[in-house]
Amino acid sequence: MEEQLEERRIRVRCAQLSPRIGDAEGNLEAIETELRLAVEDGVGLLVLPELATSGYALTPQEAREVALTADAPIFRRWLGLLEGSGTTAVLGFCERDPADSKAGSDSADVVYNSAVLLTAGAEPVVYRKLHLWDTEKLVFTPGSAAPPIVQTPVGAVGVVICYDIEFPELPRTLALAGAEIVAVPTNWPRRRRPEGEHPHEVVHAMAAAQASGIVIACCDRSGPERGVDWTEGTAIIGADGWPVGRLDGGHRLDAELALIPAAERRRISERNDLFGDRRPEFYRLGT
Amino acid sequence: MEEQLEERRIRVRCAQLSPRIGDAEGNLEAIETELRLAVEDGVGLLVLPELATSGYALTPQEAREVALTADAPIFRRWLGLLEGSGTTAVLGFCERDPADSKAGSDSADVVYNSAVLLTAGAEPVVYRKLHLWDTEKLVFTPGSAAPPIVQTPVGAVGVVICYDIEFPELPRTLALAGAEIVAVPTNWPRRRRPEGEHPHEVVHAMAAAQASGIVIACCDRSGPERGVDWTEGTAIIGADGWPVGRLDGGHRLDAELALIPAAERRRISERNDLFGDRRPEFYRLGT
Image 1: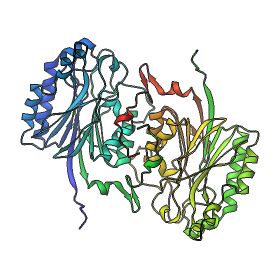
Image 2: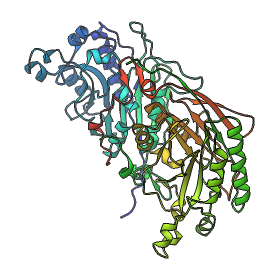
Image 3: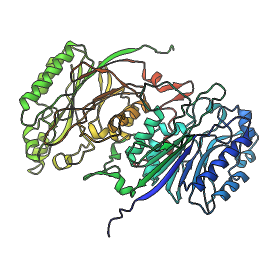
């Protein structure tokens, strides 16, 4: 059989929105604007920030009030906007699960820091953040399922959220399971870093992308919120581990990528394969 | 019990030597000079390049000729130089194992791309590279044991070699098993990279250091050899993931590090612990 060397050209966009606590309507409108524009612009994968529907620094009470269910009508509506397009969208939202309410009064208060993947002709796919950052632990319940990988027109897309990407095991798990692109809605609180360096979260994404030959698209947010400043470190990392793309002059980072088949991407020298070279019998990771 | 907050100050040095194929004597002399100087300068951990005793681009025949055994007199001699000091040294060498020769005539040709850790009062500890790069596969046999962690005056030191560090599972394995510092003798063939970026191998080391709160010291080499140019990317990464240290004006990179106890290094926010936050039940790494 002849080798499949065909290149796929994909367009990835991250839109670094500024969600506002208490303005759910404005937040949903901003998201909808991005969805429409992405379809118009022929974007293959649109990534929006973590908790894009609600803002980040929520009190537990506020989180319960703004929480959406996976079958919320707004997701149907947005799926409708994507209908007939090749655009897939990933965005963060504050989730509640009707099944938790049924389970008892304590469970009724459970909310998750989730992301939803929307792609035409499929049900919304929801992921619940596995690794919670700091005060998130006071508000959200951590997920209890592995991140999803969804076959989309743009390729096999995996989803993780923010702090998740700092655990190298997770993007590797997704890549080994077939993900070609990992979408990472994030809210990165600003931290000091040495001059000239990428934010440390971007360093994690670069290493993870290079280690497995996958694309990683991290969409941060902007707009200070209750004393938290953001890194505004949105970055799209190519399958070779280097940041790609450029801002459109505003808050949108677009990258055009030429993806060769995964097996080719992982063949990084005549005799090396990023997966084939692994020696898992010597990795002790408590899994 | 009161919390242990004492800081340990350690001094790490990488000496970016230029080993030459066919000049074993010169190579050993250069190493010995570095060992003496490190002891004089009170260096806690000295890291030297991969295959420092022999040079890199060896033919199989040359590799067999220059191979040393783990009990080679030169290692005894060097241990003698370290006697009474707090200096630990890690350097790469081409290894043969008398046990392989006994196993039969085919096995007599087996050589390993190895590193030896030398610390006063202990036997030499040898590690055989697990992940071989490109044409190394034509010369060396890959290791068949996990990398060692050695208790030294400078802390618990793990050892990997060059391409090994691009497999995030390996530094993570060492960190989870208690390594505080990972020494990485390397020979990084020069590759193009975007302007302003660290070599991709350094990106891997930065991510691995930050993910586990460990120090990673990568010692590259210089001096073109049989058409191979080197990145000369020697880097010492602090436990916060950022490069530290500075060149002494020549080929020696020195870093002074203040190491707080490991549990403190991993507590990166009031509610976050780099290890405690892991969700290994969701990592699928084929281990």
